Amino acid sequence: MVSEKIVTLVNEQITKEQYAAQLYLSMSAWFYAQDLEGIGNYFRVQSKEELMHADKMFDYVNDIGGKIILNEVPKPPHEFANAQEIFEKALDHERLVTKSIFNIVKAANDESDFATTSFLQWFINEQVEEESSASLLVSKIRMVKDNPSALYLFDQELAQRVFVPAAN
Image (cartoon, rainbow, N blue to C red; front, side, top):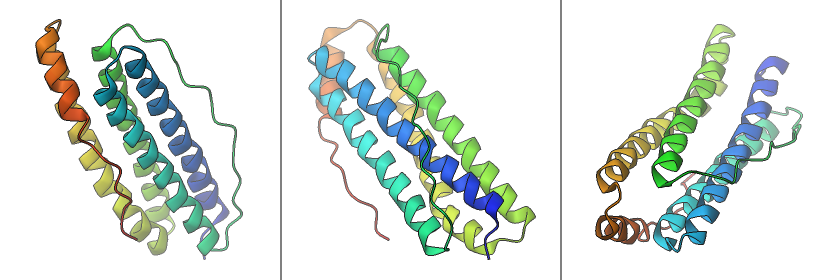
């Protein structure tokens, strides 16, 4: 039996994942407006992944018989100074998501809620990957600086990303 506290935390995480989707979609729109469609694609795929994360959590709450409560998703920023700022904000956001998931795991561990702990292991592994990827992209965009040729190549690299739904 999963406690109301854990159900509340997972419901809050659903909202955080939905916010992340909106944030990344906003970042994507910024890049599309700059004619950097490859980087725009990267963030659009990232947005879809975040929605998938929210869906997995939604399904979990439903599967355990918890009450799903969807909260208001805050409006993400839409003005950014430059590409580097966006990638740095994305990394910062991934770190916040990781902390939030760790908080749920800690609460689940404190309650000996092994089902939730097991369920969240996938998200822990995912966040390791997300932070690593975001950190690498911050390093790459810093190398690009104001070099149009390097930015073009970076844009082409990120255009290759495709959305692949996670296996259940």
